[in-house]
Length: 256
Image (cartoon, rainbow, N blue to C red; front, top):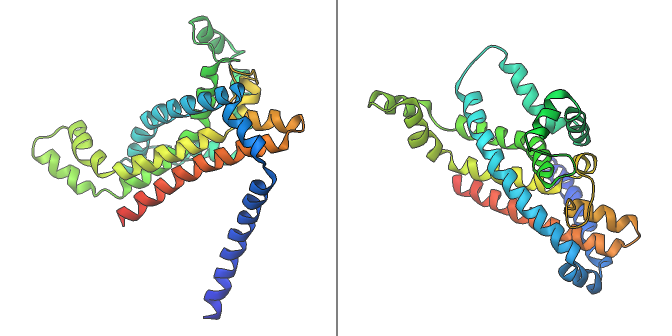
C-alpha cells in the first residue's frame, strides 16, 4: 500500500506541475488576446497554413510509415539494426538540425537540381511540409510497426494458401486489422508536425501570410512583448493537440 502510494505521488507531481502551468497560461491570457487570435488576419492565415500543411504531412507520412512499419515488423534483413537506428534518429536529435541539414542539402548539386526542376522548398510553403514530414514520420513508423506486430502473421499465410498474392494478403488482411495503428500513427504525425518550430525558422523563415505557422506566430508575438496573444495561440495549439491525443486514447481503449 505504501509502495503504491509512493508511485502515485510521482504521478500526482507530474500532473499537478503541468496542470499548474496550463492554469497559469489561462489566467494570464485575457479576452482581448483571445479575440485578436480569432479575428487577426495574419493569425488566421497562420492557423490555416498550419492545418493544411500538417494534414498534408499526415498523408505523406502515412504513405511512408505503413510500408516501413510493415517491413520492420515482418522481415529480417542485413543492416536492420542500422535502419531502425536511422528511423529513431529524428526522434532523438534536436529538430533544428533537420532544418539546417535541409538548407545545406539544397546548396548541393542534387538539391539545386531539384529546385531547377521546379520543386522549390527554401522559403516556400512546401518547405514547411518537408520539415514536418522528416521530423514526424518516425513516430508514425514506430506506431505502425507496433500495430503490425500485433497482427498474427499466420492470418497472412492462410490468405496466401487460399490463392492471395502477398500484396492482396497485406491489403485485405494485415492492413484492415492494423487500422487502429493507422489512426494512432496519423495522430502522432499530426501533433508532432503541428508543433515544430526550429526547422521552419531555418528553411522557410517567417513571412506573415506566406510561411508563418502557429509555432512561429508564438515566437513573433512574444518577441515583441505581446505575451497574452502568444499564450492565446499556445492554448489553441494545446487544445488541438489534446483533441488528437484523446482520439488516440479512445482508439487504444476500444482495442483493449
